[in-house]
Length: 71
Image (cartoon, rainbow, N blue to C red):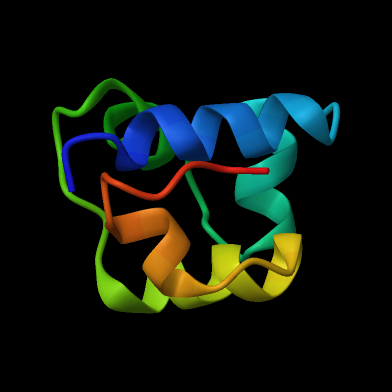
């Protein structure tokens, strides 16, 4: 799960979203958590991963398995 932040950032940027816009879309009150997830300072919880998976229409395992790359 070391690459999860990188994958999250890539998905966000490919969809032309700022961290603040993404946080609003998934119902987070603050965007600092997402920034910490992207930089690897914190590990995202499962509920966050499920929201990201649904929003970007990607399987959760693609996010958490380092050996899998985004398309």
